[in-house]
Image 1 (spheres, rainbow over the protein chains, first blue to last red):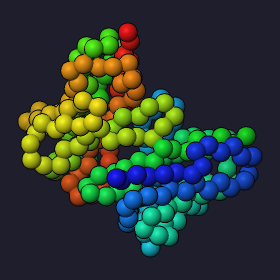
Image 2 (tube, helix red, strand yellow):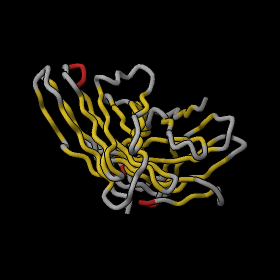
Image 3 (cartoon, chains in turn purple, red):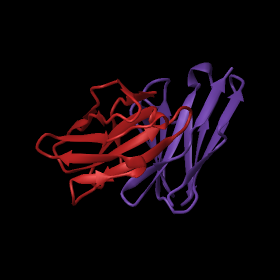
Image 4 (cartoon, rainbow over the protein chains, first blue to last red):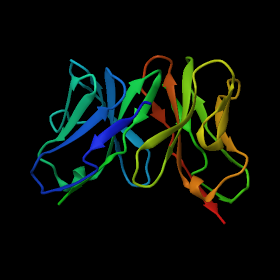
Length: 113
Length: 113
């Protein structure tokens, strides 16, 4: 139980385009999901907390207009990187909260050319 | 504010030897504690967690950890490691009920034959 999926696993896009990443809880409902960013050989940086039916809460320094988060259902949250630039290239990981625990997705590798 | 310290950035060990990965935290309130493992280019997998009750927690893959409140530690141990245990290990703390995790910087476990 407590499986979280992410799609796509890897994406390459041109600078200036937008990219959407999906995070799904497959066998449970999650009112709260989280989006993280991980730089090479670094720990996870929390970007935002996604709450079903309400606006996401962004961490300090994260541009909300750049990283759009939508949590439209109890099993799906999406992260859209708008007008992507090479510095947005990173590993993005989502998690979903249930039973006092965060369960993580497999991550999405984004490369912006 | 909470913080998590993983003093060892890398721990080399021979196969079948025991290993301990250290984690210390600071918090002024009660906490939940977690250990996650990350294999290359993958998300985080939950190894074990301490929410309450017995301070010795057993997890998957033969790992265990002990919560020591007086020393504010949650060290991860395995009596005999395998090559397949080579990965990055993250300790994380959550203020009870607040859902947000604070991660340590990670410890790379390198198991060699």
